[in-house]
Length: 313
Image 1: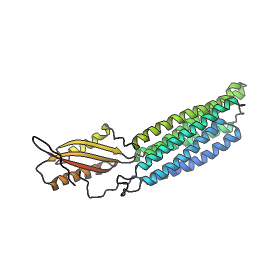
Image 2: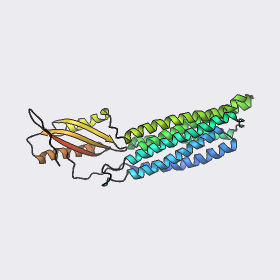
Image 3: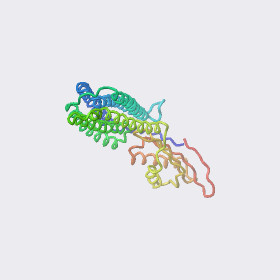
Image 4: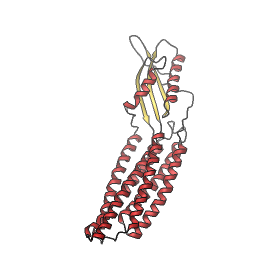
């Protein structure tokens, strides 16, 4: 295997990601306090459940910040492939917090059916409306930045914000139906606030499970899909001296990927010439693909009738 002597350390735009995480933390603190206070004061179970969701969002945002901070550390002796998977661990933690919050919200909502329904108030509806607008803006901001940086934790955080939008919409619908029940004198409509809380719980549980499955697959070194490897193939085949590609694989480490490639070169050239071709493969891959953090090139000699594999230090 040819492992280049040059050290190429590619740092993604962690500053932008850190700013996004800080904004999420501050907004989640404000929303958690506002929805919690209004939910308790007005007796809205759906809004209080939504506040519990915001509390999970807050813990998730803190986890994302920690993950991003660790992920940007350069490779060291114990972690030669970098620390990118720290971000995936924080993503998995976000998912666990979401699922834990959903179970708590579901229990509280279902338990409400065996108690006297609380009198709904318009203040809780206004709070839910404000939360919908704020969280939708946060979702769009985190999603666009996550796509730009290819950050799994930011995309998970964006999904978290979008789930909060849905939960706030459900809470708003439940509150409005409860208000309608009080105005029309229909008692069963007063329980719609609790129904909305239960719906929020199911929604959050589903999203948390989806995030957990995706991050777990990446932590288990899931290979990059063949479709995503096609641009890598196309570039390597254009590099002078590369006769063929025997094998090409890439490991996803969150914000970056590590590429392993086996190429064929003319068996009659010198070791130094083969090393130069491999060096050019690595240089062009890292130049043209921002996500490629490192490339390990294995050189195979190409013979007219037979081929035997050799490894160059």
